[in-house]
Picture 1: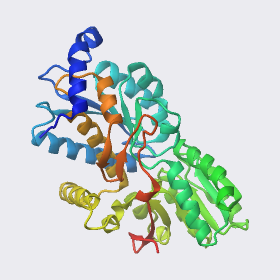
Picture 2 (picture 1 turned 90 degrees about the vertical axis):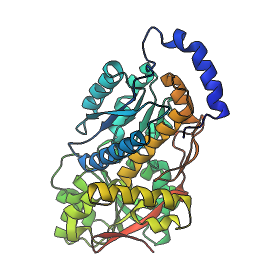
Picture 3 (picture 1 turned 180 degrees about the vertical axis):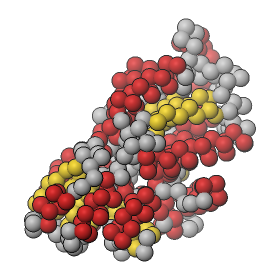
Picture 4 (picture 1 turned 90 degrees about the horizontal axis):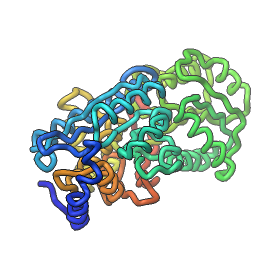
Length: 390
């Protein structure tokens, strides 16, 4: 049952007194009989479709669950989806429509860093809170009071991966990144953090979203004195990287970040994916949470319900969507029946100790990511499955 905290009581009083003045003219307040309408921007087509599909699955499943249990404060949850096609311009168009025409009270998305950043202007103008499902550091480092983020940002993940390389004596690094928002963000942090970790970038190559041949970049890497290839990408092009690496007979280890923690990569690269090492949260091997923990209980319940509904296990991107959805929903539970987006923003920022799939979230007025490196582990692809890296 929804609980009204002392903070919620205060918000209720403020909202009741100010609602007419604040919202009367713009109609932003939801009528009592209306659902809580939440906009969702995901990449269901284009390079990030492999991320957007599990995100949408998780959101639909959790929406149905909450509504079957009676909704939030007597009102159902209505998710309004838009596909940005992994394109920043389409993300902007989608955000404008969701905010101005659909009158959403919050926006979950986008899937990609570039798309999440592209809608920043609409978020600022409307003051509608945004919870991004993308991992680029810029999303919360370029701070906006209305913007939150559920994945571990690159500022958390990159040093964790660089430490892994250093501990294994892999100090000469060939960096291969995509030119999209997530890859650019990762590139900037890797090149800044590598010297601090005692690593040297001996080759630095990029590729564009949509590229279908990386042999030129990998040939340059093959001719270098690199000891490891560090790939920072989130799109389907990672499969081509793995396949071209095998075709060229490159035996350097291939290491990456959470952008490739998806079944699509393993299935697409098949044998070429074997031995790939990546960093991500604990959901890929739930026992990594610790079986007596609240984190394990939450993840196990989510995995079981997702598997039953969709016939496969969720990946980390489904987890990011679960977290974004419930962070918004839990904030709604702390609000009165009538509210404004600005009050919802305040309650999202007040999130403290929320146990999700990506970790335990605690936001603050200066931290809208709320996670730490404690949530991360390293994996290896072995026999077509993720296993914990030793």
